[in-house]
Length: 202
Length: 235
Image 1 (cartoon, rainbow over the protein chains, first blue to last red):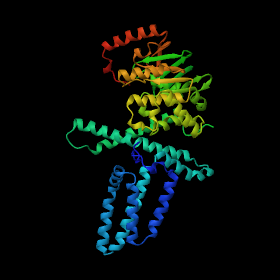
Image 2: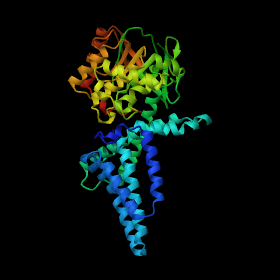
Image 3: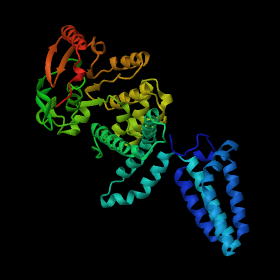
Image 4: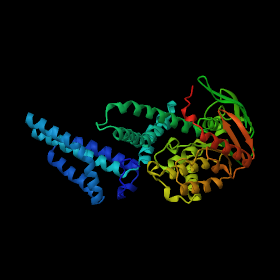
């Protein structure tokens, strides 16, 4: 699966998704209650320890996916450096880093289907108002299924371009890619219809 | 059974007045590209309503009565990428079962059952995106068979597959208990079938025992192969 779930099995993979998400929410609220950079530093060390408990390979993968935060942290440092509020900047940066380390840990140790099941459970009160949570579950599955498929088709178009052009791939492939995506949507609609569409027969 | 089926797209007749009654266990439908084979497959599976006429299985209209259609007919698309809706093998197979009214647990049990029946228990949780073309086609076949339809429509199921992959899939299809209607342009794929229907420009050109129809079909295909009708543009 292309989801962000880590293939390295850790102890946290066996913890129910609902428990992990609830703990994550509680921890995030707690982080906002902490104002002292020293305590936030302790929290970050704890979060790091939790990630490390999944093994070195797992922790390295986790660190890789957190690299995306570097520009934001740099921006915070510059801003607070300029305005002279070093301590406030440190608090914000530590809080952000700790919260995302934990969130990333939950993401990496929870299968997408379990995540969707929790979301569906939380949305279940909506069913009383006649809204279908089925459509929501299905749309998540479709996004996960077709994101790599469409990316791959974009790659093929780019290749077809490069096979006959020395220049870099241009914006001209956007239209055919959109057409392909629409065409795919047609096929999925057919595939859904072939097996009963959105409504479930009782 | 097809009754006087016609399909018009714009002002082109894709299928014109086709009436067929099929009872054989294995029926092949052969024809050239653009002869209307895929449209016919879609009509039989009830994915498309004909402009005129109707497609019925045991009396139920496949395009109108979708609930009955789900139990009556399953279709395997030419391109498995067009058929697979879900990111994992389990979800893909369980979907149709849940559509038939099974709850989540029952669907999961049936999914395991079909995977083990095909000796593919190792495919639990596998990502559909990473499968080979032949594996994808097999997942589609398992997903269709799991729903236990009485008839399975196969639309060029082996195109683009290498010989060993094709031979393995053929073995799975041969073992299918349900009736099979297979669409193909390759006479070899339906040589062992009970009956063959030759579709040409949207009409039935010939219909009968496999040997007779395939002999005539092959002779005509070879004759056309000497010509140059690639030059002719449609419309």
